[in-house]
Length: 197
Image (spheres, one colour):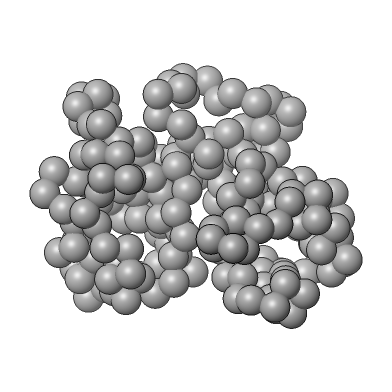
């Protein structure tokens, strides 16, 4: 059985409001099991039917939710191994984290970008911000809070393709609670500072 997390873009923004209880019901109705949600920003942990591949599960979830909710619900899916790798990746030095007024962010992509796309994205980084690519993720350390950033996320999506953003702390907490091999119910990753969640 495939255990994965689906990061949904655009949930609970503007007039689009959906309680986690209702979201879980929609996901279960599509044939997924052991469904859990984390916070109200469209983070869904679920188990796909036997032998279903990650990409196929993501496409089926995206199509099903889009049909049920009557608006586009882009899905960015990661399996257990990928979640542990994203959570463990530490591209920024402690002094960089301490100097930043913002929280580390993870920009999730559908696929690893090519060199041209990476170059176009790097050119968009505001002065003082740090961008580091790793696989199908862009790790972003903004020098200010997201409310004050000058990064144009629409232009970033033009360069990289569809994206959704989560704090690194959210990634770490989901990985620790649902995907840690030594303790599936662990809720706080060792060494995680609350400042960066």
